Length: 200
Image 1 (cartoon, rainbow, N blue to C red):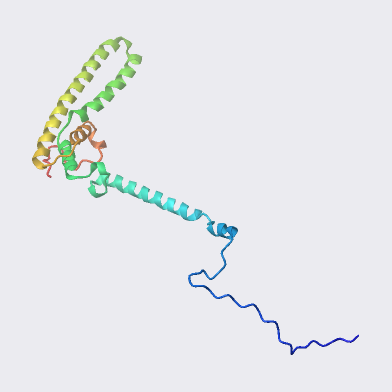
Image 2 (image 1 turned 45 degrees about the vertical axis):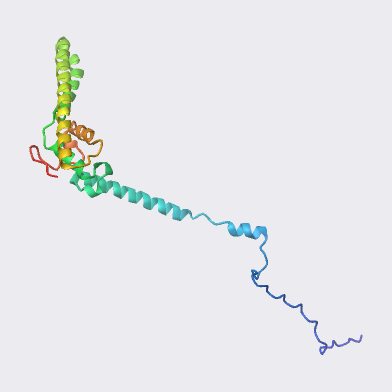
């Protein structure tokens, strides 16, 4: 068989010319819908979210610890908002500087209630007499607390109006609620002693 040699000297077919890039065009073919949807999918950054939640919890715990310490030490800058301000500090100091009926009466009332529970088991014959006595003591103590509450109210109003031109609402109730608490359990902790004159 005779093979004909290919003529390498023949010119090759010219390639198709590249279309010119129009001004303002992307310079690339438009993506298909499948490619666009794949590009929009982003993996959920689970680790970052968990880390952010962990940091938020740590920050909240730290703020809570600082608030508790501030209530114990009297550092007003880090106290909860309901205890901040010069007016509330003055109310606390006024209440803490006096001996209030409520702080004495409620421990006594607790003892009376315990006696009322135990006495019928120990001395049933004295139950009626003790019940009457306990009722007298309880109602007498409540009446004294009410009278003392009016005295505290008048004291707080007079001192606040003398010290401040614009008095916040709710301060009298704030002071009365503090007055009926046992002194050692009050928060923020008392910063003045009994009989000490509170300063602004």
